[in-house]
Length: 336
Image 1 (cartoon, rainbow, N blue to C red):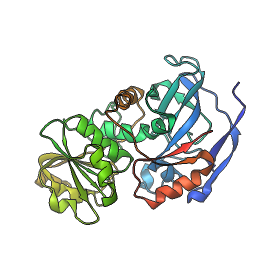
Image 2: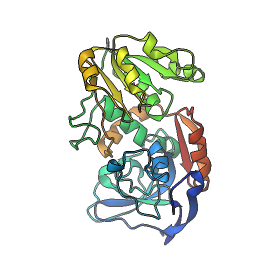
Image 3: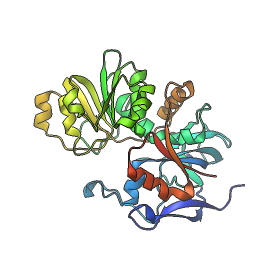
Image 4: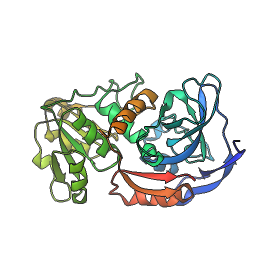
């Protein structure tokens, strides 16, 4: 029998990791088209600390309203507890994973129970545990929608044109910056799955890890600037992005593309002169795409790395770990 209350991590104000409070709150009820999931693990992602900080990382005109108290988090793996009306395709007892409602910032995943639209849901790959499954959704869907298939027609908040992935295959060279992180290490593997030649950029301690995942070349950014070494790449996926992303323009061949995951500022005249397409998109929840990723995970074609795990009650410590950087894979919260 489902309890009436649950433990969750909530925000009553914005700020550093110390504003995360572990406390009691009512168990949500699934609406039509939703299921209630008993959570076993929660993936920790950058938007979690952006929300915790009040979305100050975003330009004011792009910030959606946030109502307190707020339960952060988007990525879950768990077991279907109950099924709402018109929620076809899943039944109590199904093991599932999801990126919930993103980009609405209303997923409420740092909790023992969460409601999930069935459109955002996929069966958990049988060959991996809940910790690994919870690490996949946002990072995996970001890599998928940038590199493989966009999967939606929503306008991007970052550009007026529709993002289009670059066809990848043998003879294609892809540079992945921030290759050891959540998005980066999955992007390396998806590009290799498509047959591309992959150059991974990360700090030196991650070289063995990334070569194990299939990277053909490795650049330690602490000792070498990739923009001084690489030329004529077909595609750069900058999983770090931000203000310095334009430095990768010189690594791309004319007719190639640069995809910054986090929005940056580019000079249209420079990109036109170089003949480089700069494109970005907003990752969106997508159950069918998550199911495709699940098949690759089950087959061992793609693996997800776990940097560290923390109990849900120690979400503050998880955010402090994230703030120290140099993450290898993903941070995950476990739920008893």
